[in-house]
Amino acid sequence: MQKILVFSDIHMRSVGETIIGLDPFAQFQQAMSHAIASHGDADHVILLGNPGSGPINLLLG
Image (tube, rainbow, N blue to C red):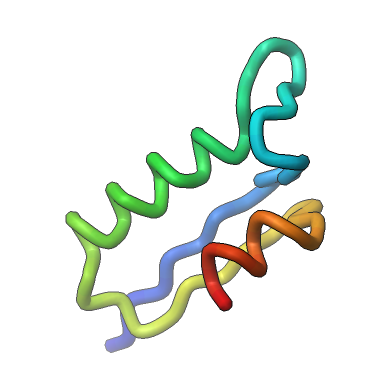
């Protein structure tokens, strides 16, 4: 059986830009760090929502 991680509704903006006082880029970094630490054996990572262009490209290449 494969392990698949799904991040939904990430709504990325520019680094430091907030949405209702929350920094989605910082939250995504925390979530990804947790996923790597806890589920590093995952076969796939799926990003859903509005990923934007800049931050995701910087993180994932």
